[in-house]
Image (cartoon, rainbow over all chains, first blue to last red):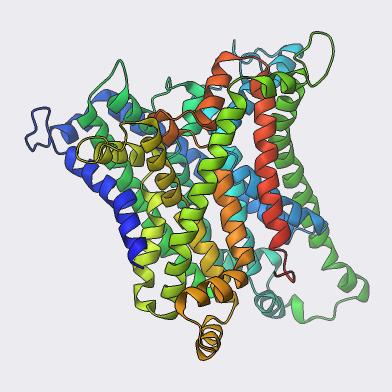
Length: 271
Length: 277
């Protein structure tokens, strides 16, 4: 037990605490809230709002698509092997983030991408039409590649938790499938669905490698801003970087707490 | 509605459950095919691109160039060594902890679970600057040389693996009767090191292996921490390649996908229900 507490103290807790402390420090070493006041400047707000928008978009779309996909392979009547295939694929795709994922999408929808070229063949000029992979929608499209599979991985066991008895009981009482879903299954599943969407939100919010590899830091994004402020050549204000980092830890912490609460609630029925 | 009590003709009775099932199957196929298209296009496009390095013909030239790149193998092997070191470090810390929490100190479980979740709360980009700030100046100065930074990187990776490792080991422990096994071993005169090494570890093989493979998949191409610690590992190498070359990055992405697939496929294989080892 002791090594565990010592190790996590040294490599998880202490680094977070020192950043919290440094974020309260001015350039001359005095305690100040200036760094947090600077969070309201346009650059920071722009980065945070872009991060929030992308995280929200991919959490909601990824959550819905992932849920329906999990439903399709577990109760939708697709052939059995689809399910185990999708489970393995989801394990792969949810961990296929970072540089290779960014590269894959550059080759697909970048300026020289295969799909971009195909669209050009049929007369649609994506980049002329204002689309770029290095934008809000572009990055969202990339993030969905790991968001959807994560939702699938969490939802499959939850859907398995729906008891056959409930459906039969509902049918015996004269409920239509629609009524069963609206009145029984969805209320039971809702905490789990919402909780996992919050998890997806945090997952996208804290993602750095994919965005960095894709845009090289061009897009205003909270994770990218931290790196630029602390170790950048152009912008350099470590104190502000630490404050942005703390804001991130706060949002991530909040989403994990909400996720745990909702997950615990869903275990009442599905556990 | 009172209709439900009326006698129902036999023919519709047989068809009634069929119709919604068929409609479900239709929508299930629609969803499945649409998402399959979304997932397969980037993979297919990348693969296609990786075959086109030579003008006018398809071939594996991009892969040949990638594997012959002077920095490919050094950075890759360095990342493999880092990953293996982080996995062992993580196992060494997590297995006794999970065991102890299950057997002796269940009261500490919420605390331990909370700590193992911290890597989700502290994103890598935040953690790395905390580590640099903490160990980057006297008296510790761990970032002074490349090798000492590397030690720090491995420790960070071990910490990042805690959520996956703890959950995996914890599930493994739940699947066996830890208490009886421990008592049986003790009554035969085994001490704690012997119990852990000869009884607990062997019974946890599947759990340990899946935790290890998952950690491997995450750590092998890790970019953020390695980048800011100026380590020449596989992640920063891939990022550089993506910016500087045309065809090699596509071969690299295909190789990385195959690696991830190998790790996850092995997990799926060894954790298949009914097969324990």
